[in-house]
Amino acid sequence: MRTTKDAVVIGGGLAGLAAATYLGRAGRSVALVEKAHAPGGRAATQESHGFSLNLGAHALYRGSAAEEVLRELGVRFTGAPPPASGALAFDRGAFHTMPSGALSLLTTGLLGVAAKIELARVLGGLAALSPAPLASVPVSTWLRDTFRTPEVRRLVGMLVRLTTYCADADRQSAGAALAQVQLAFSKGVLYLDGGWQTLVDGLRGAAAAAGVEIVTGVRATQVAVEGGAVSFVELANGDRIDAGAVLVAASPRAAASLVPGSPALAAHAERAVPVRAACLDLALSRLPRPEVRVVLGVDRPLYLSLHSASARLAPEGGAVLHAAQYAPELAGRDAERELDELLERAQPGYRGAIVERRFLPSLVVSNAVVTAEGGGYAARPGVRVPEIDGLFLAGDWVGPTGMLADASLGSARDAARALLARSARRALDRAA
Ligand SMILES: Cc1cc2nc3c(=O)[nH]c(=O)nc-3n(C[C@H](O)[C@H](O)[C@H](O)COP(=O)(O)OP(=O)(O)OC[C@H]3O[C@@H](n4cnc5c(N)ncnc54)[C@H](O)[C@@H]3O)c2cc1C
Image (cartoon, rainbow, N blue to C red; front, side):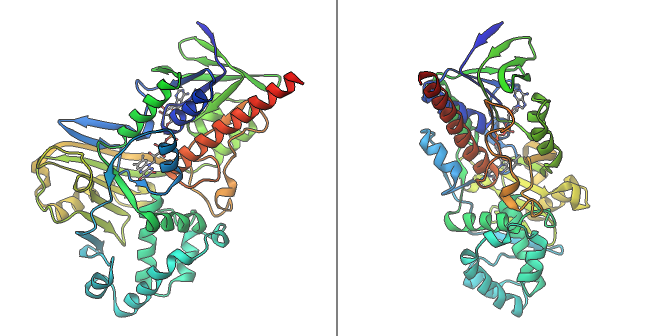
């Protein structure tokens, strides 16, 4: 079958859905092609026995580009910040009170006196530090050169992992990491009622209302380029969609394989080092220790949070817990066993309450670490592929805006704007 559209969007995650909606609202005819049976990508939520399980722990950064785009597109969501009480630090095999305010800082056994004094100063001053001069500095160097006590270095390293999901301190840009920590500290985050599927459903509804044709269950196999410009998209079922503009909202590797004639895309695919996490997602019929809500590993790259303490994710009496080991390829210990041991310590007997258990050993949280070597966000590709007219990109590895979903949704908006600006220019040229 052969059809014609103004634009084709490849990839139906948050980025593709948002970009297609912007284009549809601007009056363009748009087809969105998603290879999975439903849109959503990494923002999809699994529903099981009345529990909502995100694909690993997800928190929406407030005051971020993501929130801005979602509001702009009329996507409704509700949620609440993570539990403020009941947070523990897990260090060298023992639990300690997490130092989060004056009293807990005084009383916690996690830190010695010198580290307590330094941490009090550091927490007060982090917001005022400027990320820009640190763009080309690795997180590990920044921690070593900025903080005096090893305990504070480890704690700030933990904050970096928590907010960026990245434990590769030798590679990650300290500037990008600091900006992300500051974003988290300034407005906080939300756990979403019903999970991130509410965002997917909201965006899908907005796309459909904007006239976007959503094609699921079929992979785009090629973006054909003729005379230096895109001309059509070929699908795995043999269909072809003619279009003068294509927006790829998928991974760097997918983009490079869709457009094999682009050295720039091949180079980005080659360079991108994904941020990975091993995730243990749990639905429990009851919680053995309801007072334990958050556990953050200090000497180990571990995370555990009771998302259902804040958001509506579980039926009455039940609980949704997300646990993660950051960078399983670097962590040096079997992730599933380490997470299971942590859970057994934090929630003794939890195994007897399991309704649903999902272990995902190596999820791609972000397609590309923001590297110090690349000078931070400067190394990311722009939304326009300069060597191919009509080809645009969106995703968590594209553009200058933030990390994670912020990068996905921020670049989606930028890419849609760039595509619309190009078609406006071409219309003017034709009229002249
Ligand atoms: C464990 C985990 C925790 C996270 N936590 C957070 C968090 O706390 N805060 C936050 O902001 N973000 C978080 N994220 C990141 C967030 O989920 C992503 O940034 C966002 O969902 C990515 O959206 P996307 O559209 O850019 O990419 P994706 O969701 O990856 O979508 C790309 C889509 O393209 C499709 N596709 C690929 N190739 C083709 C093809 N050839 N043809 C058709 N379709 C194709 C794929 O099937 C996929 O659906 C987390 C992610 C993970 C995995």
